[in-house]
Image (tube, rainbow, N blue to C red; front, side):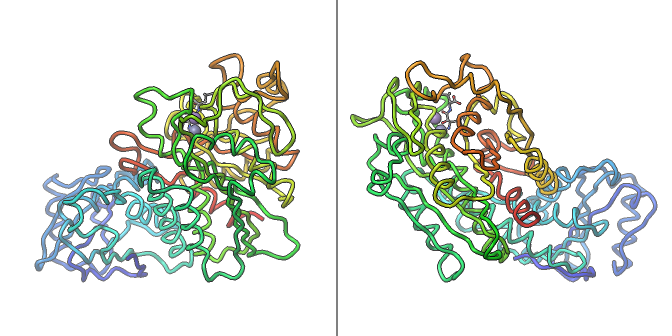
Length: 485
Ligand code: BES
Ligand code: MN
Ligand code: ZN
């Protein structure tokens, strides 16, 4: 549990004292620090043992208590990402492993510092270890009693809540694909919204999808023994007049590529392909936990892209909910098919003011931007600008890619209204996929986040994230909803 206290007490079994380099060289330590501890720090500083370099850790013992000095370097050279990494590192260090009550004393109090410390702890120490026997008896860092010194602000508790939502999304992605099926996701959403009168949900199963004509969504799921589902959660936290903002997530519980089967090396991590839906569900959890005063539609297009006798086939032409026909040039470009139907269904039936879709959509986005920034595509400069602002404020990074009229050429088909593969082959795959989606938005203000690279860490670490899901997009979208109407 994380609590906040406006003054340091130095009374816990463990203390982490964050010190900037100049504070160390000038012996400027926080008030309330016991004299002996002050002398001990001076001693190791004078001896040149602790200089306050970025991420340097130095343990001291006093009265049977452990105090870990954590160097930050000079504050002006410290990025808030690096601060998160340093905090994660100290919380996972052997010095604090067996200590259950820990006080964290920052070198200065500001909103961005507090946010970085909370996220360094909550997001940095998250570990998916459900299937590791030896991990079950350990106390998790997040179950410890942690006090952070920061002036009381409502925002502090909210940051902790949003981290809980991020980790909730991570659990959904990390769990086995044969556990997080469409039924499982539906139940998880039901459980989240239970007891909240301003939140309701509608689920379209196979039968309803057929009756309403969401043929693209159905086709993608055709080889699966599970039910396809379009889940739409109505969250009415705002005024009656305010239009909905629709968040639409790609929920491929597994993506084998279908008959255009993915090769070894590309298929193994494809439980991550519901990262967009997990982001939408995580953001729904944030909205509920923060009691968000907005009207939002949380939409998940859920399917499984697997091979079988019934699988949909490359080269065929399908009808869509919108009425446009689609040439399936490649069954592995399935996300845009599910999203196209979900987007047109939401546009026609709910008339949202804005749509933001989130999807692990293209490997091409990873080629373009790597793993640290998701791709943002939008036809609306104002919406794109606001999303970039939220991205910067939360360190949930997004970088804008272009969208322009000539792109419509790239998704033309010889035999249908549109093709699910961009041309020329291998050129601008992230933006041709976005162009495909745009053609189903019917001019609704729209933005698209391609989180293919950011949603998952394959080997080792990235920033303050360990192996597995990152919950990409939850912090960004929660911040966006909080600060814009
Ligand atoms: N889910 C994948 C995209 C992906 C790739 C996500 C790697 C995360 C990591 C998507 O459905 C896909 O297969 N896209 C194809 C599109 C291609 C066939 C036009 C791709 O990116 O190769
Ligand atoms: Mn695919
Ligand atoms: Zn996919």
